[in-house]
Amino acid sequence: ETGVTQTPRHLVMGMTNKKSLKCEQHLGHNAMYWYKQSAKKPLELMFVYNFKEQTENNSVPSRFSPECPNSSHLFLHLHTLQPEDSALYLCASSQGRTGLSGNTIYFGEGSWLTVV
Amino acid sequence: AQSVAQPEDQVNVAEGNPLTVKCTYSVSGNPYLFWYVQYPNRGLQFLLKYITGDNLVKGSYGFEAEFNKSQTSFHLKKPSALVSDSALYFCAVAPGYSSASKIIFGSGTRLSIRP
Image 1 (tube, rainbow over the protein chains, first blue to last red):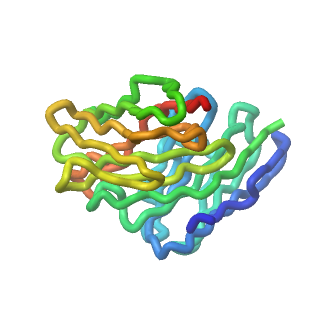
Image 2 (cartoon, each protein chain N blue to C red):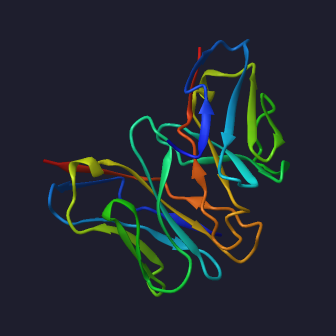
């Protein structure tokens, strides 16, 4: 059981569908992250939120739309995805940014996304 | 440019033998260094980190890592490997000179422990 919970764990969606991934952290952290993990590729940072404000968007296509209503919840809204977007999407949180005092990032179990 | 390297894609060790998973980094200033483990179909799990102080850091499941500033390395070690240690291991570095610094992950090393 981790302090970061992601739902659903598995999602299969068509290219014309709209779906959302949900993340909730129970650690009292104020920074939240979305990462993408694909086979044979390094971990890719997608978005960073600090105190529910987006502080980083690493040139992520607009078909991925994040939402952070408060410091405990983070969503990733998905629409008109491509098959190459199939990957493990990891949510994470930390108490402040990792560059400050070496705060540890804690990850959820991930959401496996398959786009067909 | 900041970077972290895990030079081995795969490390194979017999159960009971010591194991080492290598990590080197290149950052400005004093780095914060991390190790994470990922078991199949799971997220990344924090193992240990170096912030400052003693160069030998002890973490979960009997793992430890040694910070070597002169060699810019932070190798992960365990005296006696278990089959259950088989997993994907990630080294990560945060440059540490700015609150806006981002953590950089290595490409991962797959550790395989044979019975």
